[in-house]
Every structure is written in structure tokens, then in C-alpha cells.
Image (cartoon, rainbow, N blue to C red; front, side):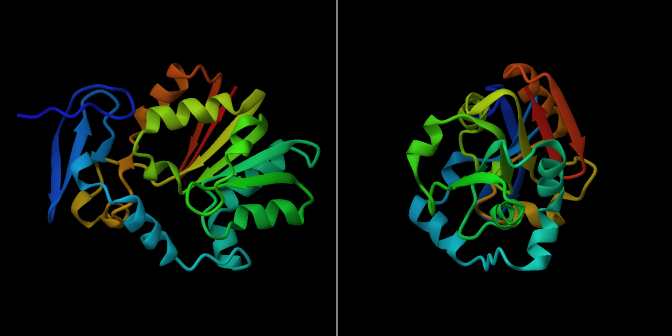
Length: 211
């Protein structure tokens, strides 16, 4: 039987669940669940899927949804610090809220705000909201995010975590075909150790890693 290594920690995986033609595997170490690479969408199909989202950064409900991230940044940093919204999508409420508070923040998105020069700079904080679950190469992505932070910087990740006690068959989060890596809590503990973050905080959907 073919063995697919976990794209985060590199450990062996085993079959976990099948949804139609889509196969999910589970890592034997970090316990995360991820899509078999054969079921990844093409870049064109992935972008088309994102364009179907109605992302209005002025929508107060959308702003409230990301408020765990924005409230934490507003509490931890000041307008004098610089930040990056990584995976900002077509319209970012994080950018809207932070800039309304005179914060110095820029946005990067592989499909909609792809400015590679921004990835050559260093930031005091990085917001990564509803983005990490799209990572096909999460190890490489987290390595990059860590390297983009200044000393004492913080990485704010918002994603719905995989919980083995939840009914996977009815979990809406896994049905999105662009959600290819679903993190177990142990995965973030592994990330903290592997990339030498000094602190970690897990509060519902929000994970904060600090240098």
C-alpha cells in the first residue's frame, strides 16, 4: 500500500476517510488529517473557487469573524509596528480594521495580491486567517512565516482545528475542496518545537506563536 508522508512533519500516514472521490489521510505523529495529493485542485480551479467567495472587508459580520485576530494584534502591538496579512484573499477585513486604527500593515496573497518583494521583508506580526488549511506544503509555509518575523514577533493563525471527537462525516470544514490540511492541536505543538517559537497559545480557532 502506498504511503504518503505528512506534508507537515514528514511522518507516515494512514487512510482516514473517503468523501466521494476525495481521500483523507491521517498523520501517525501530529495526528492531522490531510487530502491525498491526487485530489488537489489545479491552481486555476483553486483560484476560481476563491472567486466564488463574497469577501467584503466592510461587512461587519466578516470583521467580527476575524476579530479574534484583529483584537489580539491591537492588544499586542501598536501602530508603530509593522505587520503582514498573509493569505489576505480578494478582500481582507483584517486589513480594513487594522488600517482604520492607523496600523502599518500590508497584504500578500498567492492569487490576488502576489507581491514577492513583501516576502523579503521582516514583520513584527503576521496574520494568517483562514489560510493555513489551504497549505499544500505546510512545512515550507511555516518555515517561511517564521523567517518573516522579527525577534519577539508573533504569528496569528486562525483555522478550524481537527478534533477526533467531532463527527468528521458531517464536519463542514472538510468539504471545501481547497481545505487540504486540517491541523490537530498536536500539530501546532510540533510547529512550536520545530521552528523554535518560544510561546504558544491555543484559544478556540486562534493559535498564536511567539518568538
